[in-house]
Image (cartoon, rainbow, N blue to C red; front, side, top):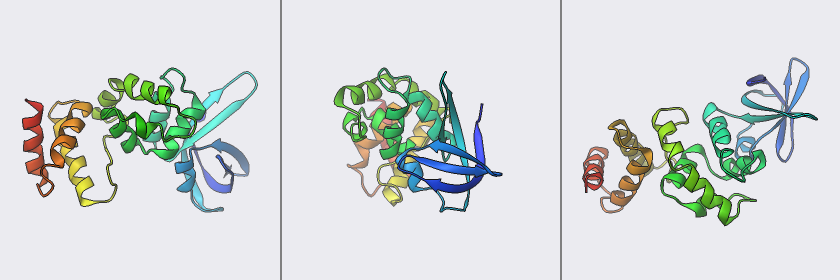
Length: 203
């Protein structure tokens, strides 16, 4: 099985990249977000690979990190979600944004992905609610939750959620608590948000 490819970008298409590894071209299917972050043609690239073997074909799916690949695998545990739908979800939501949507049971966020209807979106947030937080807290998928990436407020929210998870609360519990208090105390420091979050959790 191919688990990683390191080479140069030969060419790209709507949903794939051709990676040249010592003269051998590997066509790798990727989410749109992954393709948007792909280096320019001729530049070096390293992709984490998920290999699907069928009777009539071997298909490679590429990701910029292990976190994206783990979410790709996890999404396909949901009824009605195959590789195409999983890539579609990862095309519009980063791992952090997807974790946040699941923790908050925000099916509308997941439903933004092309080809994901309301029923499938509901199944994703419902069926992964118990699975995703445990994996995230254990560090297997990546424990960041994004609200408005790059902002100071986002950093405080992520740090607060991470602190509460480290205290033993699930990602789902921590995220809901922090989202509840963050709007009340917009100017609060991370330490203050942690205290407010803990009060919310013990209600």
